[in-house]
Amino acid sequence: MQNQTVHKNKFSHFTSLVWQSIKGGEYDYTQGSIRVAIVLLAVPMILELMLESVFAVVDMFFVGKLGSNAIQTVGLTESVITLVYTIAIGLSAAATAMVARRVGEKNPEGAAHAGAQSILIGLAVTIVISILGVVYAEEILRLMKADEEVIKEGVLFTRIMFGGSIVIILLFLINGIFRGAGDAAIAMRSLWLASGINIFLCPMLIYGWGPFPELGLKGAAIATTIGRGIGVIYQCYYLFGKKGVIKIKSSHFKWDWPVIKSLFGISWPAIFQFFMASGSWIILARLVAEIGGKEASAGYQIAIRNVVFFILPAWGLSNAAAALVGQNLGAGKPDRAEMSVRLTTKYNAIFMSFVMVLFVAFATPIVDVFTDGKEAIAYGSLALRIIGTGYIFYGIGMVMIQALNGAGDTKTPTWLNFFAFWIFQIPLAYLLARGFNMGTTGVFIAIPVAETFLAIAAWYYFKKGKWKEVKI
Image (cartoon, rainbow, N blue to C red; front, side):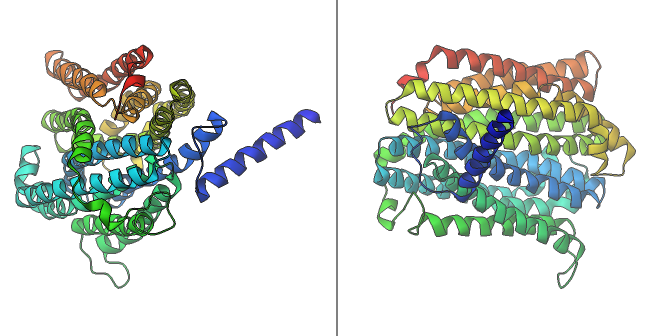
């Protein structure tokens, strides 16, 4: 009876913490229980990125009904759009690290100023990306080995997605500011809103339901861009209002070259870091399309969407580690920062082990939801099963990488990604696929092998502890 009471009290305490994390509010993450701090930060971050992953899965679900050409268009476009995500995540990593450090130092004005300067950098970069993407959309699809029929059907989708780059970058960047401040609930709610609108508009605009015209594939791009745009408006309401932890004023947008230089010093390695990862995914997607053709490419893209769906929530835990590292280093508590990372790694590995079992055991039923094509299902199931075997290592590696980023040491993860993906994964994929005549199976195998190598290397550098000495 006593044990039941204890378990009931623990469960009640946990649910209370979860509810507190969803409501949001100010909390000092440099004091008190580390487990409580992880829950308060991680729950909204996990929910935030689960909703971001819903974007990808919802688009693929509705687009999948339009046939293999539509699936390949979305998949290949998203493979290149990951370069936009790369810049957004790199800028976000810099904003999170600097804002968290200022918050840990109890300097909210400095945190707001750093956030505003990061937005200025993001806006400048977005202009260039949008113009290039819109002008060269057709060439981008052709470079990715898309069929001429696919290019004809999908070029407008690609143009709209690149034209909406500004909402992708701002959504990630501003959420990075909120995460660094420890205000993860607002970041979560902005993604809820954006994803909810996308889920509503996607079938309406694709199939012409209700009062909406039937737009086909381009309707998916318009729905996604509108959803993200409204999410950004919601973010700005809190960012420039009086309710958020970070309160940015117009004066904070005055160019501050020392701060911009510092942010750029953190962000450019982070951008290249994620470019190493996303760039390798682009090459692998191109290799699958080249070897296996349209059906293999469609199946692979479905598998990758499901991989992303479960990786992004785990990334939420990793982002919690980054915020805790930044704030505790700012407060002069490196040992607390290290313990936060160790606990977060444990929780992430446990979560990812469940996902691994899910993918290995139920790969075919999962892929079957997204397409009726037998060949695409066969390729997608095989890809999901093989990639899923490395999920525990994905979870460990991403926490280690984000911990280093949260400390402001973005250069070490950049080199790790370079060796893991470009020196190891890509050559291994070509060797297995062509050298050993394993075809697309060889490409799939290269992914978990490289991710395992990355996790072990990242753990080694984290253990060395040099990240505790980084000054920003």
